[in-house]
Amino acid sequence: MGLKAVEAKLNWLHHHFQIFDEAVSTYTNPQNINFRPKRYNDAKTMTWGVFESKIEGDALAVISHMFGDVLQTANSSLDYLVCELFLQSNPEEEAKPSHKFPIVYNRGAFNQAIGGDALYGIPFEAVAVIEGLQPYHGGADSIQARLAALRTLTNTHKHRKLHVSALTACPVPSDPADLIEKDGEFFVLAKNMPKAQHFNAELGPFPVIENGKVDMDYKFSPVVVLEEKGFREEPINLFAARLCEALGSAIMKFKPFFE
Image 1: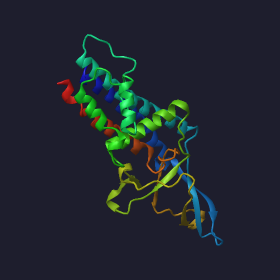
Image 2: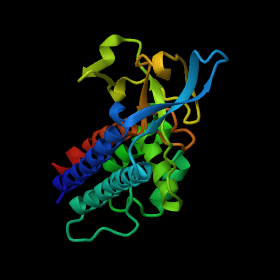
Image 3: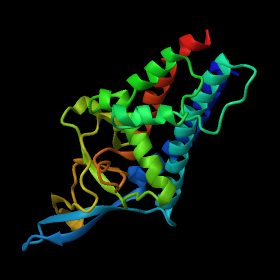
Image 4: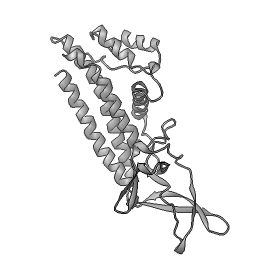
């Protein structure tokens, strides 16, 4: 019980993430990707096109479900934290159905969550930490912003399937040090990638060389992104990795309450 129980939840989150990340990495491995030309210039010396996967079946549907597992486990980890905070202060009682970790967008909504007993019986000092993690305190790439994204996507996922794109690309970073060569193929770590192309964008132009082949010169890396508005520019596995990191940082802020 206590912090160890919360950390066990975090370990389960990382387990879901690792399975998900491996699926995305396999799907976007250059050995499993083709470039499909869609149009040419008049002389057919240059072409524009898109990436497509060689993997049979609807792998993106599987990735979508795995991503949903990451979201749900992350969200339940925060609610579980609130329950453990309550039990730490009230060992003779059981956590209430109303207990949850509120993530809201203004102070009024936070006060309303408290009025609804979301944080019933939680030490005032812990409530203050939870309030400090609300999105209205954070910047664009803060822990607060990642928690806000979690709540937005979790609420969406309750009502419908999250839309995962067919496939898109990130431009390769301009710094050669960010490129990794393995068995003659070049890779880019997701954290080093610039913003992803829109999932309907054509890549190019690229020169057409002998036998109709296309020379892309490793200028783009295939990635999977969410089609959801506001989440289209970040590779989905990088988003999930940053979410897991933010969640771990947030939960560790409550370590003093379990000591």
